Length: 283
Ligand code: NAP
Image 1: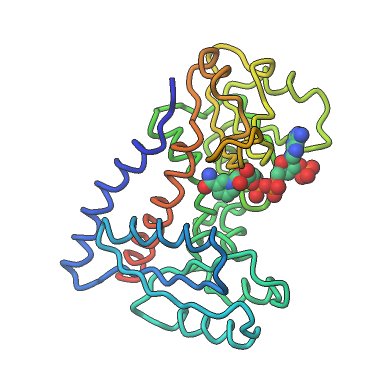
Image 2: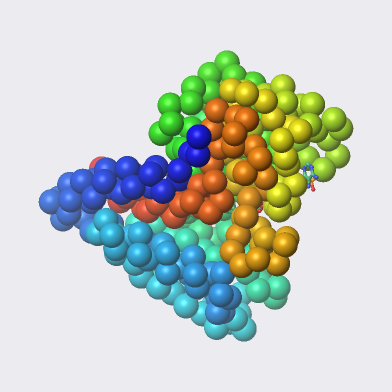
């Protein structure tokens, strides 16, 4: 069974439309500020998708575009003005930033309450401390949204996460732990990877290695969430995941496809964070 992220995003959208209507009836117009330096095609493409998703549910978007060569001070000024703008409830700062920019300083300048993609230390602390402060990285949280939508109970299950990055592997592991999964985090130095994956009930794959995990790793009854987004290694157009979906899908209970899986939920999740921030600001 394919675990469609598009279905998850569509269901989220319906709820978000209602939430935005409720906010607007109280005079609050939820708005996302997007800060971008330069004209990187992947940033522009994500920005277009995010804008479309925001507009579809009535969330406004304010763009702060800086030239790639803008200085650290100019970027910090823009972050400060977005932080202080009461009409902007959440901020998305595109990273990686150009190499002359001090990333730590830029992240630290962003208010955790407005940090929509879990990039500040404050948001990260919220995930690890269970304080509920800030918002988790959108992609990591999308894994949970997919499992929830398909009613895959995590409590008591053995969960294997392939990847330990700050943006996906580590935060998703903490979110799964919070749902009472028994989580094993694997990485490039892990030994006997197929054996560990075989033993799991739920597998989250976030390695960024196209079609690198095949049927030898899986067994019946497992749920697999493929976070990978990679260029197809055979030269064909389009993207593919880390898992060989075609050969794994007939074996397991469910797997999220690429494209149409986690990526479809990520952008919807960003919008849901903006709405939550607007709700919090209105309290
Ligand atoms: P990353 O920073 O490169 O991290 C990859 C992780 O995978 C590392 O922890 C690495 O281990 C581990 N790894 C690499 N090769 C491995 C192997 N052979 N066996 C076991 N572990 C291995 O990547 P990322 O930023 O987390 O992104 C992961 C994937 O998610 C990428 O394909 C990216 O494009 C995709 N992504 C998707 C979305 C979405 O919306 N769907 C959003 C963001 C990213 P070490 O730590 O030991 O090096």
